[in-house]
Image 1: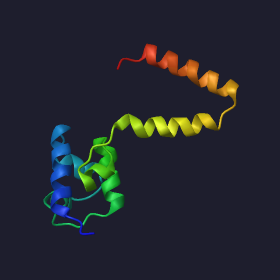
Image 2: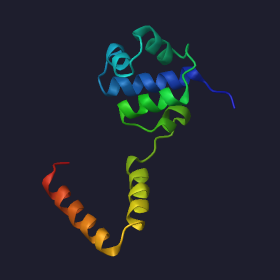
Image 3: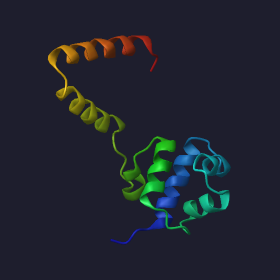
Image 4: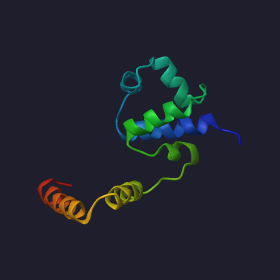
Amino acid sequence: MVIDYKIIGKRIKAERAKHKFTQEEMAEKLNTSVAFYSRIETGRSHVNLTRIMEIANILNVSAGYFLTGIEEDGNNYLYEDFKVILEKCTPKQQKFIYKMAEVVSEELPM
């Protein structure tokens, strides 16, 4: 499989622009130089998966999007993770978590 770092860089740049971050801000968040971050966006740096995941977390997208261009439904993975957690709980714990989720959803604005 050939990795097209230019395409990955373009996707990263587009997401950064959506969030109105500058390259300087991204470099600071990643604890790297602006020059290195710029090379990521232009595809001149072969960015590793760890760095892609860091960027994805900052920009609140899946790392897979940068690699494949396919946007995941952000709630799907949360639902699956939450389901795994609930399966480990007793029925009493599940009921408590459900009630807490109701309170949070009513109190916090979307």
